[in-house]
Image (cartoon, rainbow, N blue to C red; front, side, top):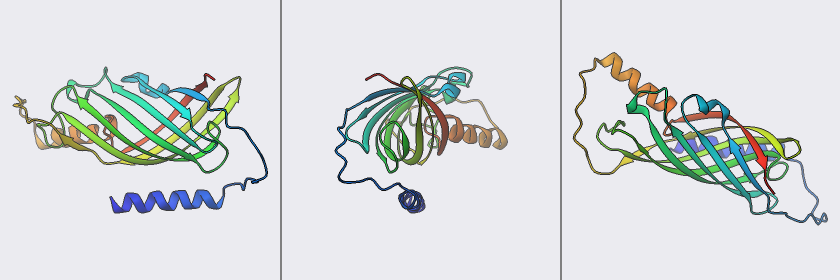
Length: 195
């Protein structure tokens, strides 16, 4: 976790070095915009929708609903909710580069996890990304984040098929890369400004 924090600090500080200075004499009124977002690539295996609310010129609050519902084995299906805070270190909310801190909570449909018996998970994460306005309220962006996940909840009795070690490793790798509890998350997003 210390390495994640060090990487996050390095990324944010390097972004600050390249940030464009803003004049303190400009009196720009904050309009408190509201954006919705969709990760198109996740439609292959689920739905990922987000809502972002502008708190000031540089800060926004976002909540994402991420689900993995189809085209994956039942063991990997999950839903999660991720509230997060964003700080735009260049540009302003909806257009620029940002750092993000988020904490998610979710549930696997079956109790498949690194503990093999717990169904619920929590994921603290840090990330960076960018959003760019295209035209007429539409935008495009990308984001990458690093996280860790912790399982909790009652232990459940699970009946599993016998799996050899190679299948178990493959299952664990798919869990880490394809679930809402994935360690590394890289995606692009389409946004729409509602007001």
